[in-house]
Figure 1: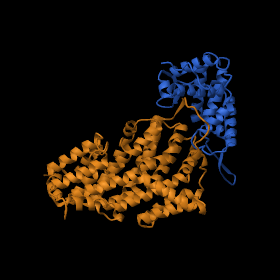
Figure 2: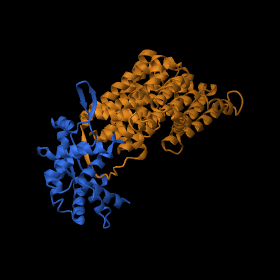
Figure 3: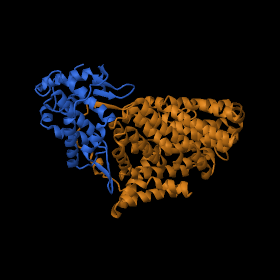
Figure 4: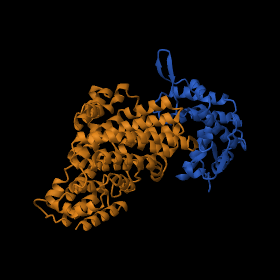
Length: 196
Length: 426
């Protein structure tokens, strides 16, 4: 399968969007944020990015399974907590991403071999946000107040913010020059282009 | 003669299963064939044209009106953002605990399921609910099943269904209500168990997917802000009136429409919104109304004296009378209401119910117990029912995956319904 076609769409155009704007886009596309003030989304994106960037490195995933049907399923990686916490790594998509990096000349942002590190770091954040004390810290960092009765204050969940934090953490852990969000968007555009 | 009628039914089921004929057309074809075999004349008293078609077609008219009003209210909940606001609030309050979010969406689906059923209910709860559940880590099959199980929790209180059973089985609405109230705890227990057990078994999952976000929500979605908190009570209005105050079904639904309208719409926009959502409701209600016309015709055919005389000995011979056998046999037959099978309540199952009533093999309330219990299975697990197909595909899984995952739970609901029926009405 040729994962990335010779005629690539929108490479420069996507690269011109900065990482924070890509994060805002991700939030805007996440259900429950329809009609939400773009400035509020930006504030949440910034907070999630800062949280992910400064999150100390955790233990590596207990179990990693490699699969080769990611392009068909539109997946780069998947974390599942049952039956045992596992990160599924889709090697065909990863290879396509590395080819795309070379073709766009983005090796200075995504050095060879760094993507695998980024993917594992990304999925490890999801695991920590689900099961650890990190979850409450993250909610406080976002500061989305959904209820206040006197001194009682209830902070709400911001759908999609965990994804932004995981990408920010992956960027730092793998020493990337740009967020994995950029590469995901470019890869998605290339796959869309191939399917058309 | 009875055997020939059963053969006609078998051919009709085969035509529906193989999708050679849409269900409504197959039911009408069966009705006409059964009427002729039962010795009905073409016109006159107990005839094909005058009795089966002319009187049968509008026999479920009150159900059709209730379905239309339910669809109207559903469109209003959708257009005014009431449904989406409830889902959004649930995700915000419980989002980092996926099980809490799933239980919340189950509750919203149940609430919507009391107003309207089928695909429109699934869409109202699922358009935001399914991706929101997936975003917080709930696996796709669990998410699709949660919407369907939630709707099934609401179905015992779905007013158009009460009207359907009341008219089709000739049972007063209060008696229908009394059975549905008994069926509800089983549906609720199964819905909650589904969420808790499946969440425990499947855990959470997060995907790094290749999606190219535009960052620009669709224009209509963008216009929808949060509905005011008091508007969120709209789905409860018909329920409180019909269940609590015993107001009739159609006025209860109309009151829901009015409450939803005045709590969400500026006075100068009310007329436009009322008409727009009413016409939208017609569109949504068209498929079930077509089905109810066909079911009315089939019921008229199987209740012809010739059909009753022909079918009575056959049906009597195979219908279990002992309460234990009644529960065991009908529980084993649960899969026959899947894939538009012969026990599908919105297909031949209605005809079989008509035969059981006309031949007086079981009391009408026992027949109600059977069809209402089977309806709980059909509405969730049938991979050909519109809500199951829509929810599965929207979540990105196959209807068969959802059927396999949900069937044990709804089978339990049916078993509960049969037990209540056997103990109470046999």
